[in-house]
Image (cartoon, rainbow, N blue to C red):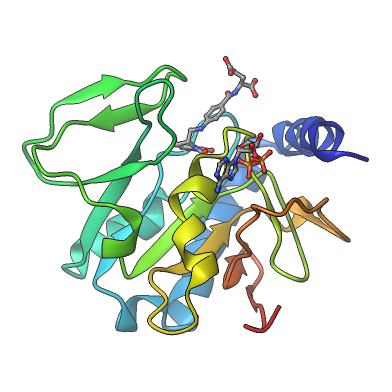
Length: 196
Ligand SMILES: Nc1nc2c(c(=O)[nH]1)N(C=O)[C@@H](CNc1ccc(C(=O)N[C@@H](CCC(=O)O)C(=O)O)cc1)CN2
Ligand SMILES: Nc1ncnc2c1ncn2[C@@H]1O[C@H](COP(=O)(O)OP(=O)(O)OP(=O)(O)O)[C@@H](O)[C@H]1O
């Protein structure tokens, strides 16, 4: 299967989960994150607002806010530009929908990926070596491309968020794909070895 076939297959699979399965997975996700101590080390954390059956990480976001973490959401760039920016959640956010219908909020000084300590990334699929299949926009890969040229001082730590059923044997790879450091599901945290 190529990327777009696999994407279609996994999106369909994800859409078949029942509301009950989604709710319990989302709570399982939070428990796994706490058990693994994910919130201890990192201060600036990038989240996403779930759409189209994506794993709901709002309990995670809620917990992080309660812990006093600085939380960000991605902003899709103007057409012909590819890099995401990240706006800090505050209680005075003014919201709108981006061209995909996902809520975003405006901020005068958005951050870039490199300013975050931890980034939770939405995904359609992932494999055991940390390769990630996204929605096909190339936004995350483009925003994180600088990591490919770095050996030390790698930031942010990249964690893909998804359901256990989104794990596949191998995601097709392209030269620009930026592997994850870890993937978090309702069941466990997979950490992927650094050397690739
Ligand atoms: N929750 C969430 N937020 C996110 C992402 C994401 O995957 N999930 N993104 C991750 O990159 C960025 C948005 N990227 C997206 C890329 C494609 C489509 C999408 O629905 N594509 C249509 C084709 C539509 C078109 O091009 O007109 C499709 O696949 O049906 C949505 C979001 C930033 N924010
Ligand atoms: N570092 C990069 N520089 C330029 N173009 C890139 C880069 N990374 C990805 N792209 C472009 O983005 C497009 C989508 O790539 P791909 O199908 O791997 O997306 P994805 O990983 O599923 O999506 P996303 O990163 O948004 O979650 C590709 O056609 C590719 O040309």
